[in-house]
Every structure is written in structure tokens, then in C-alpha cells.
Length: 264
Image (cartoon, rainbow, N blue to C red; front, side, top):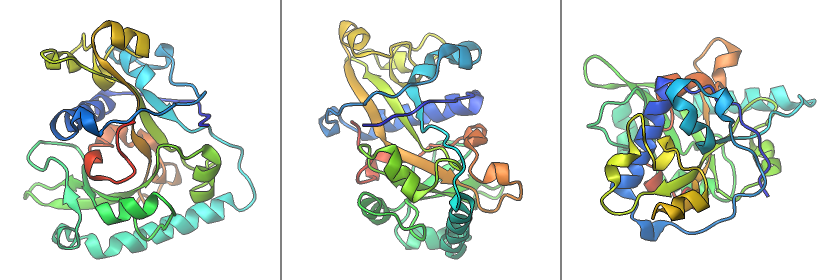
């Protein structure tokens, strides 16, 4: 069972992330790809932890519980940062990433951050963790139309528990996250995914199965699986595993192309 608590300080960047994930679902994931799964007994963010018009998003973010620092945790996390930097090194030129099978999600839609995802690495992450094989490389767009490499993303299957995640990357250091409580809009209501009064999706006011089914939608407890970002080029240790990089548009990725990360 997944047991988690959430601290989510959502901003315009987080709103953009939710928009992009919802868009990914709309354009790339037919309902037939969704399968039912049990969420478990964890908690999501409370509305009081969210600012202004972002209160609806509180019920859609799910983060691992911060654990007390244990002996060896920092050394293990530091080693993963070193490995991530090594894994990223060949791909400072984004053309090399494309040549090696990484694919850009929605390259023609402006995003603060772009995910270059490799299916093979996603499949391997489903069964074991290799910090030299991130599922996605994270880039920002440059003024000349190219891409600058800034980070990497690791993944795990949606059913992984926190002990397994902790074995991969210590939960005293990093927060893994999922996106949850997605209500797929009925036909003809797609516009209600977006806007200040959004009803469906990750920006929507609907957070429960009962509300979703009453509105004619289809409820999905999980949207994809576990994800965590690392930014090994950061000099401030607090930013290396920071979830605050939502402001840079995290999670704008092609989950539909990631084995083990399907809608649940």
C-alpha cells in the first residue's frame, strides 16, 4: 500500500505542469489505455496549503512522506547525483539524445521545461533502478531554438510502495510524487479541463470517484506512476532534489510513451 503525505506549494508553474499533463492525456491517451488500481491509504494536499485559484489542484498532488535522515542516506543520494551527471554528460547536445532514442514531448508547444523520454529506460525502471539510465532528460529551450540540459527524471511503477522508493533514492533526501484523482470529462466537456472554474482533470474541482461519476466522468485514482527529478548541475544542495522546480515547468512529459507509467 502507498502511504504518503503531501507538501505542495503550487504556483503558476505548477498550474502549467498540470495543464501539460492534462493535455498529454487528452492528445495521447485514449481511455482504453486506462486500467483501474487502488490508491491506498495516503493523503493528498489540503486546500489550505494551496494559494488562490490553485486550491482545486490540492487534491491532485501526492508526495512521499519525508523520512528522518538515516546513516548513509546522504552518501547514497550524492552517489546518485554523480551517476545522474554521468548519465547526462553525453547529451549536452540534445541532438545526441534524439539520436539515442529519447523523444521530445510536445516540442511545438511552448513549455518552461521539456522532457526527452526514452521508452527502453522506462521499461527497465519498471523492475529495477539504474541511476545511469534516467527515464527522461530535462531540457529548457534556448534563445536560438535549441535545448539546454538541466536535469534528469527517474520513475517507478505506480504500485511501488515507499520502502521500494526509499531503496532507490532515500526519502529523507528526495520526494517522489504522483498525480492522482483524475476525472476524465465526458464527451463534449473537454473545455472544462481548463480555466479558473475547471471541473475535470488535474486542475479540476472534482477530487473523488463519487463526484466524478455523478458528473458523468470516468475516475482514475492515479495518473501515471512515481516520478522524481534531480538537477545535478545545481550548486545549492536544496535545489538538487527540489520539488520547487515546479516553477520551471516540471512534469511536462510524454507519460503515454513510458512503459510502467500508464494511467491507473
